[in-house]
Image (cartoon, rainbow, N blue to C red):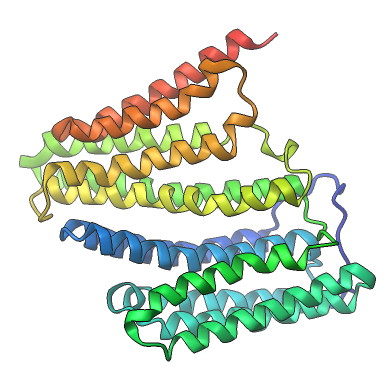
Length: 382
């Protein structure tokens, strides 16, 4: 339709699924995620894990938060008319600008281009919230206006960050990130926007697939390197095989529970949604770690075997632990089921000290985790 009044969608809407526009929007984030992963690979391979992880977290926070803002608004107010699509196009342009500035933000702590990208995204998103406010009344209108005001205030803070001393920028970044996280909690006090639980869970699942796709790409690089570097074949194929087992097990474990049944209010949804920052970041970091392991195997990384192994095992363990914390523990019965993922995370970390076959061993542990989980679930089912 050319134009529709922007009114809230129903939480009880049947057969609510992701739209083609949402899928296209997600696809544009692949560029930003790949840029962040590439910089992490470079930092880890050069032996700078501290600065690499910190820079990766800051950059990935921006990617995740931009996606979050769009996703939750769309779940409540997507009317899919021409103005809505144009506003989404503007946000996509902002995402691409942000992605173009990732390397400078990561390497030089220069956030000028990413902030410009955020300004572009925020202009469109603020207009969307103002449009939603125009179509609402009472508490719903107040909530939409609070969102719009919060976005503008936080964005002014990001612009001011550009003029702060370099040494203070990362500390101020944390303050502004905390302010961003407070906006939804304050805006929805007294009125919850009508996000759709099944739709939100599907959207998060689709983004999880995108970040795990980075690991598939890294495993492909390992196979290609094995073909090109015949003398390193014995070292690269275990990395490729282990990486594939890790990503398949991660997919299986993430999607095994019907999480939409538990998201009934903001009390459950906000911690769940925020906690996914670590799920998404660790999922993408697994792929970066596999690339580091490949570079080490062919002699291009200036790090120890232990450090190369940790680049894979640490994000894998974090992914397993966070999926248990946010998803699985709410559906597990008995101590054995509850301990499966936490213990698996510990064993994956232990694989760090197993030498050149660490990635393969970690993959086998993840595969065994799926097997144990299925066995325990089958035995406990009526």
